[in-house]
Image (cartoon, rainbow, N blue to C red; front, side, top):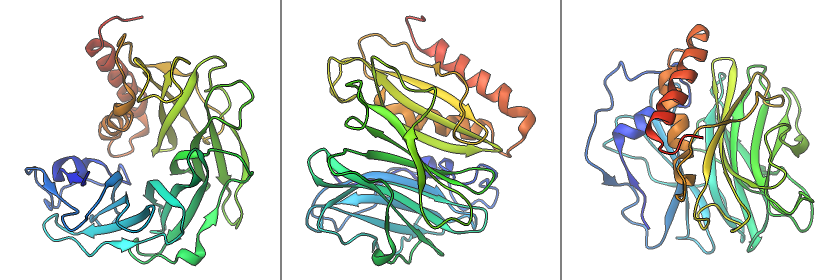
Length: 307
């Protein structure tokens, strides 16, 4: 599957919600194939609107062996830079998550499988988003027989970096839980790897986290489903949940935002948070609560079978 990319949608997936398209660089357009020269699968896109207004896209491609992460950039959406290969390991690298912090540094996380459902979370950084040193990558999580995957990275207001991911082998409850790894400002190593406190269900799977900072708050959405299937895209039904935090460690009570019975909601997690980002553009702290309430009400009105 090649990666098809809507410029209109990409302009809304901003790394900094304070950014806008006031410079008129990007306009709605028809979908176009971004990876035209790829012979195989190109999936798992992460789109970033950088602080200089340009767009970056990171994705997984199996054009090289078992799969690697690639990055490309455009200033106006018409001409894209040559794809840069970020990873070179023999394992399979999937699901990149790309952000840029206030200092302009680009941060990238992904998961690497060395065997099916066996792997770890990895991290790397770049000063320009297009130059990456594979020898500088860091393995964030440890353990021999773990299945840490589908990470999402965010920078907290205090400068900490947090990576949220799912794991089925770390919990002892028999269900998949959400976990978090943290790197404090000035630290070289990642620490405090543990379950995301207050968000996991004891009896259902929690999966596919998607996090972003909006003003001083960190917002997270994820998918929850029952134990009839281990994976959300195989389960006959699932729902999206939402929570917020000031530090990325202590969370508000989870809010269920979809109630569609008998249908999967797992594919729209990032879409929901993209709308929330747009509603809170400008990082106006006074508008955060109102925008959140309005968005949840919108979801409830459009989802039949309110609980």
